[in-house]
Image (cartoon, rainbow, N blue to C red):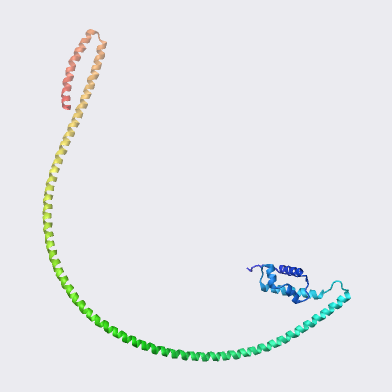
Length: 320
């Protein structure tokens, strides 16, 4: 999508006319006067925006229109029409003569320009040809210089390499000598260390054998002790098992005795309840009979009481 123009042609035309009116020339009589009053820089500064190329194009169109209108509508104030017509004719003739001179000078300038362009083009061709030849010569010289420089560098590199090889050979010879002596020293030191390690290994081996024998004896002793403790623990376990069985038997007998005592107590409670009911019936019967007859039940109750005590005696002793 095209971006809308910031300045419209109408705004440009209005601004140009305002600038001409402010200068006092609404329709300038010449291009110089128009350009003196209005320029692209002034118009852009007045508008505050706008493309210079677009402003120049619209300004040229307005200039042509206003200058031609000024020539066509030229009139001096307070001048008779006949004199104004003659002055306008004289002005048009002068302008036409000036335009013809300008056209003639432009044609001459175009011809001179064409000749100068042709001469310049020919000179440029010659210069380009000479420049090409010079570039070829420079390339050849550069190639020869490069070859010579390469040979010199190669020779210098070979010399440096030879010197480096000689120095490295001497260094390697010295390093070889040092390495041989270091190897001999290392071999001797290794042999001494190996002998010392062998002696140390033999000592450690003997110490390990002694410690192993001592640990074996300690293990045997500890094993015998543990066997003895295991036998004692088995005997104690057997004794505890027998004690547990005896306690379980006593507990079962005690449980049976308690159950028997509870049964006897229940029977005794039942008997006491029966006797209590019997006494209650006897008391009721005694209350209904006369006093003479009351002695008999009392005697009967006296007789019955020892019998109940005799019956309750064994049960009480068993419960206890």
